[in-house]
Every structure is written in structure tokens, then in C-alpha cells.
Length: 329
Image 1 (tube, rainbow, N blue to C red):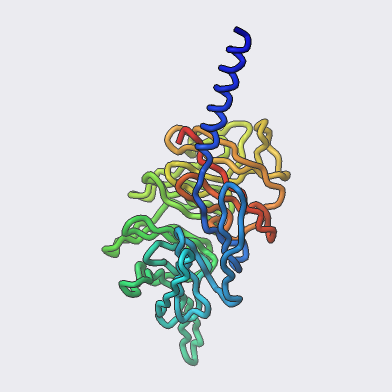
Image 2: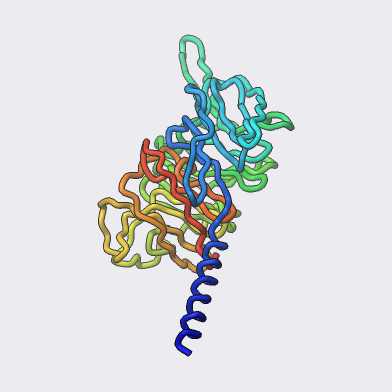
């Protein structure tokens, strides 16, 4: 009898282990290094370098197996990393390319600068920019001209483009431009913009002073996004929280770095904790700690896939780690 029970237990353990093995994510994700000098292929078992970008790349982005980058501002290059196919798309004449790019399978969005100088006696210099959609269907502006800053991010959701503009005091504001030219201004705290994303009818804007979310349709209903949850300006914030400065919404979840320790005590010390919070009910998941995270843009650190995501966990280290999505997702 005891032997039979032991055999049953062993069989259950084998089946459990087989089930765990079957659930292990099998996808491979193409991920960019922090410095955008190489592309790596990453899965749950490890990573390998598969492509080196030219030294003069100004901006780059990845969507699936499609790598987009611009070398000298004259053309946008698309490389299919799976089969090596390479195509070039001519860019409008410009004076500079912005740092951020949004890559899709068949198109990419880039910010281009135009410098205009008035002759004597004014000698006035205007630096203007616009966001363009570039692809096989051609190149077209998707925003009007605005005071340009190459370091500011933007977001695209359907036919709408969200981007920062300069305000009256050299600070930045946030607007949405629709395909018909309608411009909607958002409430904004007036600090430099770091990360910008749209999900579930909300816009998540990470300013240097903290993260705010807004109603994507109206530009209002400002909320404060913290490690402890979402709060309105009238809410009493909890005793222990950290305002977010780097966060990105994706598929119903808000992913962010925080200096909040697992015991919820507030500290400004390493290691940083990478977390996700479900937008609908604020269910929180803690993924990993990282001692050394430095990055230029959120998309250079976190790459989202179908079954999970990859974190490039160290500045100039290229230490890629794959995490399956939370099972309750």
C-alpha cells in the first residue's frame, strides 16, 4: 500500500513538472541594446547578438522582427531580422531627427526638425518640428509644426498622435493631434517629459516630477500614478508611496521602476524594483530587482512580446532577462 502511494505521488510530481515545462514561454524576442548599437535575440534560455547597427544611427526601433533606423537623416532603413531583407525609405529634407521612434511592421513614426533663420536685421532662428509616418505607402506628416525638442517622446494610438510642446515658460505641455487636425490640450504639471504611452482610454505621461494619467479623449481627469496606486489631486496620499518617473502602459498593465522596497518602506536607494500594476483593479506584481539600470528610453530597456517581456537590466552590460506575463493576466 505504501509503495502504491509512493508511486502515485511520484507520478503526480512528474506530471506537475511536465506541466511546468509545457508552460515555459517558447517565444524569441528581438531586443535592442541601451546604446542602440546592436540587436539581440532573447528567450527564456538566454540571448545572442544577431545584428550590429551602423555607428551613425540617430534613432531606431523594433516591431516583431522588423528593425527600423535612420543613419544620416536622409533615409529610414527597414531590416527584416528574420530573413535579412533590407529596404530604404527617403525622408523629407530636415535639420535633425528626434531620439524617439515608434516602429510598426510596415511603417515607422519619426520626429524631424527644420531650422529656419531670418536674415538681418533680425537674425531670428526658429527650430520647428513635426512627426512623420514613413513606410511603403509614402511619407506624410501626422502632426502640425511645433517647437521642437529632439529628446521628447511621443505616442501613437489609432489616428491620434500625442506629443509634448513647449509652454510659455520654456516648460512642456501635452497635446493630442487627430487625423482631421483637431488639437486637444491636456492638463499638465510643466516638467520635462520622459515616457509617454496610451492604454485603455488613458494617457500615461511620466514627467521628471512624477507620473500623471489623463482621459485620452478629453485631456482632463488628471490622476497621480504612484507605486501604491492611482490617486486624484483631492485624495490623501498614503504614508508610504513613491511617485513614478519611468512607467509605460501595455495591454492593460502599467509597468514601472520604483525605489519602493518589498516591505513598502520608502527609500531612495538601490536596488530598484521592477513592477506591474493592472490598470483595471490595481493588482500589483513584483518582477525583479536590479542594481544598475540606466537608460535613455523605456523601450530600450523593456521589450514586450506575446507571452512575456524582456528587461535589459544593466547599463552598458546587455544583461537580458525574460519574464513570463503574470498568469492572472
